[in-house]
Image (cartoon, rainbow, N blue to C red; front, side, top):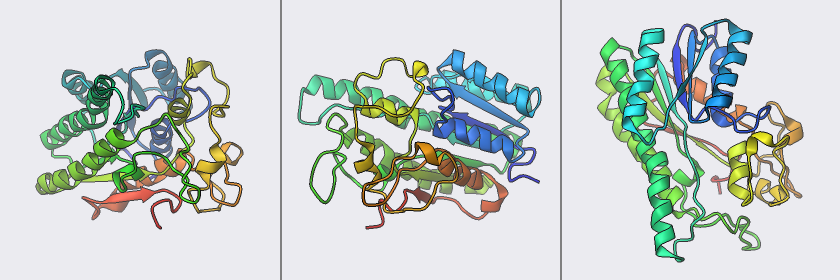
Length: 309
């Protein structure tokens, strides 16, 4: 018996931009199916890779176990359609992971027009998109009397407030092009939303929590640190010359071995490492499962000790 036996799961932002390397979303989809989910709905805007991902999962787990639905989470009608299709295909939804998100690189004290433009973009996905997903996902649960689980993806930057990624020992800015103010605002908002929704939906038996990842080695992170990212789908590795990952890895004190993919995990020169997507997927599946039946309104920080100090 798996943790998600016979459950129907929807994960937004669940296509990896570099085939062969999981994102947090795609790793969660795989973990959900490995834990017995009856159906998983893959939601993204990358149709070609999304259809291919669903096809490969159906070949592995059986026809009908995975479905791809094009969804732009910025558009509430698109999100409503996502859950309509889920209902028509599987009859209900038991667990939802609002994972779609982006990062912005506009410095707060630079060109105000550029700052406001990036603000509008990041808010539309990281805040509005999460809200839309929770709204329509919970409504489908309420409609069918499903005592389900909603997992919102926040960040360590939903716990701490830092405008830049900085080496605390030297004061050096590690990712000069990556301003975190707007991202931090949105990710704190996701935590607040989860707490308020947990209380609002408690009477229906629906639980709401967040996962708050540290820095995870994903295609999205490669895109964030690499200004000249090109087309990620053509990449054959997560490595990039645009950034020294070892300094970032050192911000996570934990020196154990990851669950898998040890060969792609950057390690600090004096200890510490970055995480891999499955290390977020497994806790997310725990929160989706009945094993966490008394857990709601909580944030699960998964950061190798980044925020412990």
